[in-house]
View 1 (cartoon, helix red, strand yellow):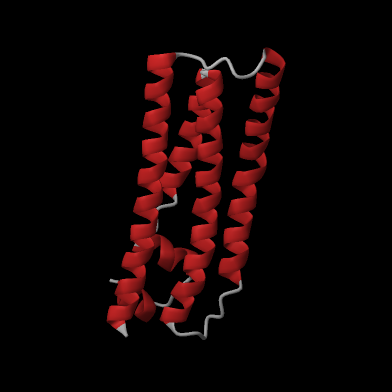
View 2: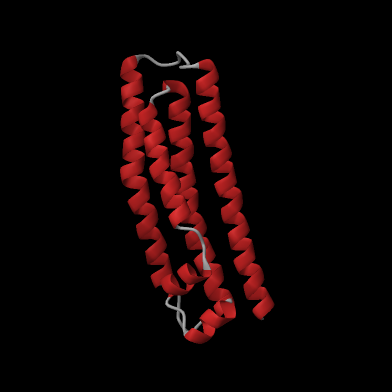
Length: 156
């Protein structure tokens, strides 16, 4: 059973690293393309302002929604379940949370591509820092799910 728990944790960590890598590559490619080609004249100034508003709203709504969803799902995990089932439920909540962050980050990078506005880079930095902060460490899993000492030891 302990090996299944370690596999689950490794799978969760692998998913996180893949999404982090894809988000990093998208950001690097966007910055490189804007640096080489400059602004893409796709939208007029009014549409670019609307785009910035949409991105800001995505940040202001998406981040708290992801946070609330994550903790509501974590609260509903039955403490009597075995650790493997708890980790499966945790994995769902965690993936939804980071997928939401990734979606917001990709939206920001697309907006940066068409607008070449550095404020989008600052917004992306906020999302990227949140992504790093929410890494699936053993301590975070044990803390967020309020695991017993025995269950925490099984994670190690």
